[in-house]
Image (cartoon, rainbow, N blue to C red):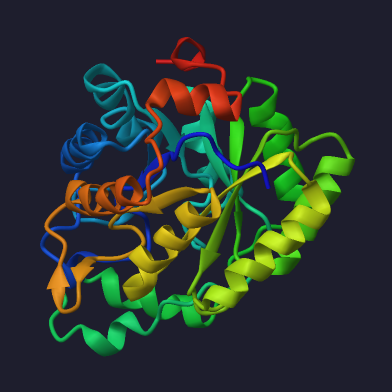
Length: 309
């Protein structure tokens, strides 16, 4: 692994997993997503990872919804925007790619394999639902896998890569690293690679620290110094895994997409609150923080001028 000279903080602002009934602090409307993203950037996040939602919180793919999100964030911050191509397992591939096609972002997430991506357990913890769509949505993940075929991965790499978009390769298990190595060998995934290790999702690798060590050892074997690491864990292990990643020489990711909490039994009031917490940890480790321009340079990004508004 190439030890990062500076730590990039990435914030996953809202996601498509958590639902409004879980927390009043989860950004839902496009305007709330913008406010949350700007706050995270002001707190020190160099990269903002974005999903979109309709006003009632339903995951959105429509470009007209994204147009209420992306331009205002770029106007208010210098942050690197990382648009999701994951969306949700209930979207078609065309829907999942719609926003990235529209904007040609500097960075886009790319899930590296099909998997069971299960968060139906949310239904066991919610006693009162705010919207009719929520319960069927989360229960549906128990029955339907999250499909990321090699065909769809190659399509994404070719379509978006032609416009200069680079990728955050989301790896939920060790096998996903070997899938990435296949696309590196084909010349479609090009260094420097940003590998995002994802832990603690039911259906993927568990949130155990020796698993992170194993992921790094495997990535070292496959990619040598051609990659940089970021890692996070969903839920209560969020901060511990971010700390581990920074200690190893990697980058960190926080945000309300991954965890609604700031401490045991305490809901986070904002994404910025989580950024401030991990920023203090990184600084205590003696590692300098990356600015957005630092992130662009380290990750080989095309820059804001290449984004289509």
